Structures are given as C-alpha cells and as structure tokens.
Image (tube, rainbow, N blue to C red):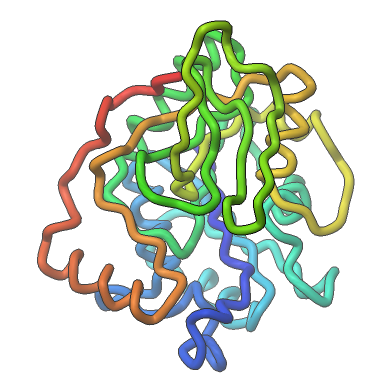
Length: 263
C-alpha cells in the first residue's frame, strides 16, 4: 500500500507557530506531526509515503530525507510549480506521477490526529471496491459540523455548507432511503482508477472532484468512525487539546464504530 499525506497548507490558523515552521513539522508528542501520521500509515501497511509541501517546503524535504520511518518518503514540491498550494485534488493529481503501485492508496490530512484503524479502513475499501466498484471510501463520523457530507445507504450523495447556505446533491438519494449528515474526517482510500478520471492541473478541492465523479456515476462509500477519538488540529487550542488527549492515553486504542466499510 502507498499513502499520501496532505501537508501543503500554510497553517494560517496555527500562527504564530507556523510563521517559521511548516504545519507538518509542528511537534506532537515529541515528533513532528507529519511523522506521527506517517508512522501510523506505515504501521497500517504503507510501504511508501508521499507528502505534498508548499509553505517552507524545503524543511519538509529535509525531514523526509532524514526520516526514521524505514520506508521511502517522497515529497511532492508544489512550491516549484505554483505560488500557492494546489489544494487537495490539485495536489493529488500533481503528485500522481510519484505513485508506483497499481493498487488503492490511502490519503490522510496532516492536521488530523485520530485513532481510526487505518488497516481496517484499507481492507474495507478493497472489499467494497470488489463488491460494488466504488472509486473511494471516506472516513466519516456523526458529529457537529457546518460542512457535512450527505449520505444514504449507498454512500455519499452530496455535501453542504451551512455557514454559506448551499447544498450540492451529486446524485439522487436511494428510493425510500434517509439522507443523513456526517462529518468528513480527512482520511480516505482511493482506487488507482482515480488517475484515469482527470489529468487537469490547477488548484481545486477533492470534495469538488468527488461531487463531479459521483455525478458521473462513480460510487463513493464511507467508513463510519463515530465514537473514535478524532481531532482537527488546525488551531493552537485544538492542537493543545489533542496533545493532552494523546499524552493521557485517552485517544488511543479505540476502534471505529461499525468497524467496516458501511455504505
């Protein structure tokens, strides 16, 4: 399994910590945040890790060159091709040539700390893809969010932004099925087929891409991690809370609610 970590963001909400240190290298439990995430991916079976970088990318490249993980760590340098980060979908397709294996791969946001069982997630996607041909499996949880994914029994239907007051329905919900709102957890598995879907360059979000692909008939399933410790550490306050939880051991050793691919 190959894996990619999205780490190109400037980390504006974490300033002043990120003024001189990229978000990926912020300390978390005595190691850089990206090293903690990458270590979890390796423990789940990743034999190669790709990290995208833009803000202070040379520091991320230096970390990768000296990485203690025991597997190759390759940096996709977005600062060499764009004055700003390419966002998630743009970053993925820019890094596409760096992927070597013709197999599903795992994507993980750098600024997420969680106890989600990544190996179980990966195997759930592989089983789901064999069963229903899904393009991707997204980790979701039932939690409060202003930007929910809309789900039915077959997976992702659309997305919404309650702050801005809009909703996108990418496909009709299943007849008689209930549409539910879940939060996306910043972790997903994608089929290698995704690189056949688009080769466009530029800056664009993978959530926009998912809506386009679902509208084209692709299935995007979910892995329900409700109840599993999960932290978006995009602000100093959230970073401090996650550090405390993991240091106390209250955010480790959990398993995802449902423990399977779900829809």
